[in-house]
Each structure stands twice: as C-alpha cells, then as structure tokens.
Image (tube, rainbow, N blue to C red):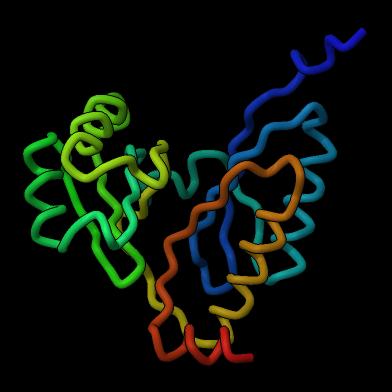
Length: 176
C-alpha cells in the first residue's frame, strides 16, 4: 500500500524532430510502455521520429547549468565571477545569464557564485547542445509544438534540443 512510488524509473528518449533536429526527452514513469507510446506518437505527430538511445546524445554535453537573472550583474561581471568560481562557459543575453560547468562541480561552482552574485534562479544538470542548427519558420513552429507537447506530458521531466531560431522568426511566432 502506497509503495508504488518505488516503481518509478528514469528513462531517456532520443529522437529527431522535423528537419533532423536532435531531441532528448527525460521522463520519470511507472509505466514504460505508456510513456514510450505517448513520446513516440508526439514525435510522429510533429514530423519527427524516435530513435535508439545514444543516437543523438553525442551531439550534446552533459553540463551543470546555473541560471541568474539579468540583474545579477553585467555580462563582464558575471563572466569574471564564473571563471573565478571554476565554470567553463557563460552565455548572457537579454533574459539573463547561464553559467556552465562540469556536472560534478555544480554544487561547488553554484555556492561560489551565490556568494558573489546572490542566489541563482536555477541550478541543474542539463543536456547542452555542442552545436545548434538554425531552422526556418515552418520547422521552428513544428519544433516548438513538439517540445511544448512533450513538456506538457506528466511523465516528462525535461526536453532538450539543438535547434536555433532567429529573433526575427521567434517574434513572428510569438506574435501569432
């Protein structure tokens, strides 16, 4: 009674979205067959296909990601703090700052950064694409629908992809 929580297992699905874009889906499920069926059908619905485990993971690096809001500091200040804290990479944009490190260094780097920049808005291990692939508006629309549909599934914990959308296309899609 109530022991069902122990029957959950973490599963990673890998596949290709429209245009051969790599997608990684991390799920936590108590029913492998149900989850695999749902994930497979969503890939199919949006013009992609599920592939063997390991078929796209090589296109990503497993990294610790520490996120800070824009207010944490200027890109230069954040970069300096990140390098001193032992991080490997920093990506700053209008939204904020993403700092990357080896997964095993995540808690140390995060703690050192918190001393300089305040509490991070998120700190987790992610699949970071080694390279991104630009997509046109039609593919971007399908990929965003695929990613959103996967993300809305109860069993799905995280969805990662290696596509890149230009700001011009993104503003058209968000305006629609």
